Length: 345
Image (cartoon, rainbow, N blue to C red; front, side, top):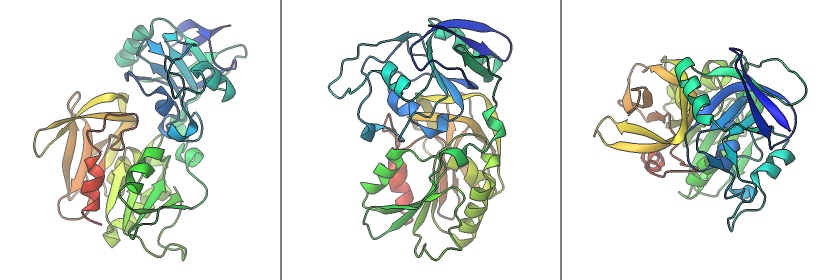
């Protein structure tokens, strides 16, 4: 079946459907990663977005078991690829990409010139779009909603049995953040994005707080910002990741802004300001820190566009990074960020 990708500027691109046959709308973004499509599709940070993969062949190694995903289902609103491989070959593959998308009711199109689509977004900036397969629908702007509310857990979850208790504020946490903390022998308590850590008898001991990654505009996540402000006053060690980086900056009186087309890939170069060493990172965000808060200094900087990639307090145990140190789907250059955080625990 033939479908259409329609941008808000009126441009239309036809493609062959290989996912679930329904219409969908969202913000159209692109990722330049060569691998890791199962991890990307299940990353809650993609909520509300139609994702274009620039790598020309997607689906060639199928989809592995759910235990390897970054959440329990696909989070993108729709998918665009140049060429879909429906005959995957990999010893871990359990299902083809196309069948997975159909099972999860996610539409997808093959549009051969994804390079042109990407150049269009780079030139004009991220745009709203819709995939039309049959029924006509309106455009949808995910930035007008608090998307964190739609992906955060609604219950408290406790895992691990270490002596130190790390709170994860779940703004759309990726599974590999949990895995990275667990393998360091920590006990983890995962709480909803709007949970009041400091006025609840169920929370007895907090040795450190990780503010997770997640989707959307950080300025919509006011309850989490309030919680972080309280933690800053109590001088509890804090690590922010991706959206958590932006939320820490806002809580500490910094500021954020929307990037022209965002960073989404596994090949973003970030420079550690102190040494000048460059790390290759995985990223998925459309917003960035535009003003470093008082008392903090720049920790990392993006080597491509100079945008902020991390802040660290000059004296207190507060730090955050815009990239993903948990590195799923890779590379693993910056997993040491967790060890740096644990020095303060």
